Length: 381
Image 1: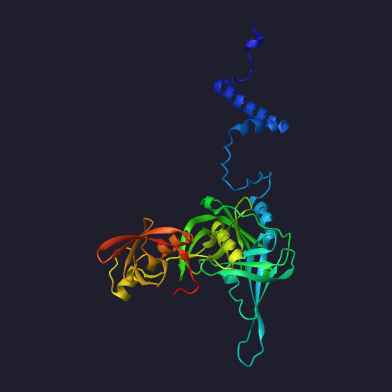
Image 2 (image 1 turned 135 degrees about the vertical axis):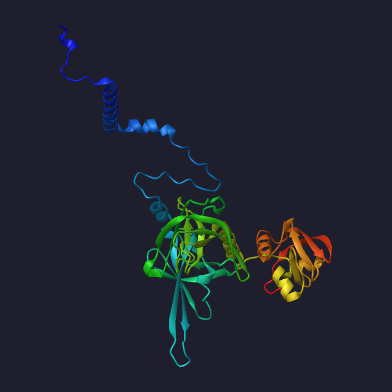
């Protein structure tokens, strides 16, 4: 009798052997990971997705260490550059009452180590008469500041303090922002009691056009919380670079998580004008316009396309180019101009001295002329 051909245990069959093989493989893999942790990483690494391409002018941040929070790392890079901007004005409620000090607080970000700070124009709008301006630094010091220049059309201002070797924020490139990427807002919501608060979200949208009175804003939309007092503070990307200046939010019933920031590329350009000239030098055609609805209701002119030139200022570039009151402006450099927003955005992208082609309608005849843009005077006409 062959004892090896007999067993009192039931036979496993094919499935039994397969289960044993799988179990043995799992046990072996767990032992390998425990005893040789680098082995699995080495096997997986070649299959990770390739790194995203870099863009000119953007410094690639170091890789995130295991367990490090990306929001914390990015915020830590910018926080030393975030300041409180305080205006103090003396007000009298009634003629017979004594004066009291009224303090208003916003945010700002240091953009140059020699004391230049970028903020919103509406943060410093109360600087009239004997009002004072001060800046609260990261270490708690409150130092006297002065207004270098402010621009209501872009809601930007530059403040300076007498200090050197300050921690200036690194400015990014807002032209390369993508919808859905990380966005971090830093500022002083509700005042200095909540200074340097950090909120995080994503870039919700780009090139959002918002018109307020005579100003046209092309803004970044984010759901990172922006509250009263955050105005003038930085919007930061995952690399710790400033990509925007927080400026406003939509509030009220039906709105939640709709904050907006001025793209840093535009803010940088305005800041350079304010630092060098104390104001923004803008190109000027020399016309006053009416959009289609206003042209029909107020001036009795039917405008099916383009905008009505209500007034051509004497001795302006438009006047010298032959444009007249009542002409209908159709296009500039081939771009259709159908409302004030189109005109404002076109001119904002041009420079003083630049020549543009103007297509317009006089009566039923289309005509073309060329205009050399000049610097906008402080009081046209």
